[in-house]
Length: 115
Image 1 (cartoon, rainbow, N blue to C red):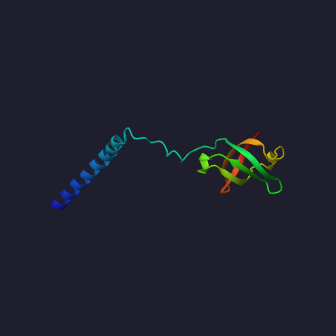
Image 2: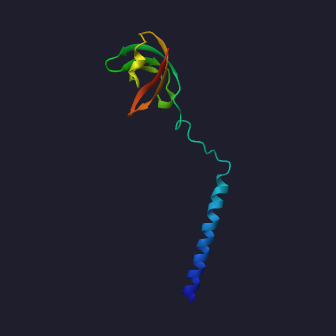
């Protein structure tokens, strides 16, 4: 009989704990900054760049660019594939452009390019 009472008391204690714990956690989270980390969700933004080389056959462009925040890259000169090779047709070396970069198929890629 004593075991039955202990089991019942244990069940009641567990039920009370389950009912009380979530509100306690919620109260402790009040005022916490629940925004994602700054680097976690940066959207692609246009980056000033200069065209250094164009390779229409491979669909790549070499750009001297500023920092690319959404990819965590500092400014440098680098060749990138372009999402749409028709973007390369109106450009020439030395052009100042605004390039938007993102990851496509695991590679840093120019997704938009404007003079």
